[in-house]
Image (cartoon, rainbow, N blue to C red; front, side, top):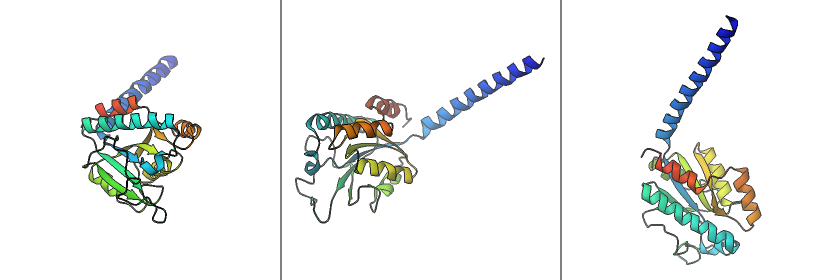
Length: 198
């Protein structure tokens, strides 16, 4: 009799956990509201990135842009401006390369600190767009992308770096950041967007 009671308790626990897990997955499915943050892929900084890493990252960044546009989710482009050394807004060095598939209607934030949330309207823009889950790409993996990822956590967002869509001056450093911070692949982002219930 005692064995039967233990078996029933274990089965009840498994069934309860399974039901709770399914309920939680359904809640998560309906709650994910993604946005893409593209960080600092400006002409002035891209020259510091190894060519192969840059080519791969830019390919995936354009893929992400198309994915977010086609699924109707917001894209926010972030630019860095150092008031002392530039680059100045409106110059070619300040801009993204013309090969980047952004649109004029994609939101734009200009920052002066590594963290894109620091003294900018980024948080306000994200909240106005109704997003709660952020996917980060761009550069630098060891600088502004990482600082903005930390800033996103501080603002209570779910935030993910996208593997192969971030870059830095050293490919080994980029690999380390992707591993340490569990960067997600393009295929995972695609799956999330297609199943996020918009």
